[in-house]
Length: 188
Image (tube, rainbow, N blue to C red; front, side):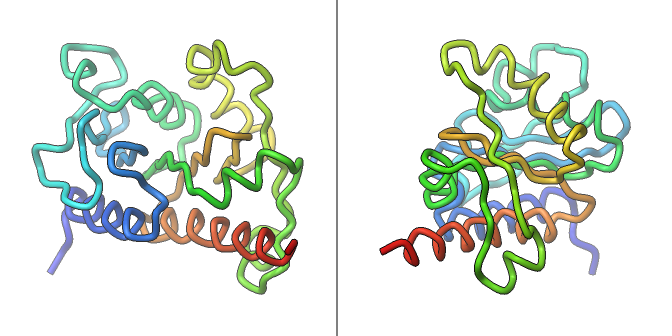
């Protein structure tokens, strides 16, 4: 039986919510469905109980649907337009990764799975928070392209990731979160 794109988004959203990677109203997840169209959660979506009404289909050109879409829609759109391999995109604010990013410039995992996937990740520093949302849709895909990254850790803000397969998307974010948890616990 083939799983639909919406089913995949709902399943992964629930999984990331259960691991405290997505919050009740915090995070975003999307899937490219055509070259110039993508599905993304709406602003008021609760990630542990998403249904069809919690998503909206957007074109890269803005129309009335953008008003109810996630606040992160502009960033997702920019990633899809600039990174052709991106089929799925997520923004999350995982607790341990975000906490670790506050006082460190790199994530250098010490656990087996973290080391294998990401031997070292430079944390992106947006510098000023005052105008971050005005710059994010340009800076996030640019940093991903320049550094050849499929995941970008942003100091104090969270994580943006993209992947060809939705399970890989969830795996990347979960492994980085677990690595940061290990690093923080090992510091005690």
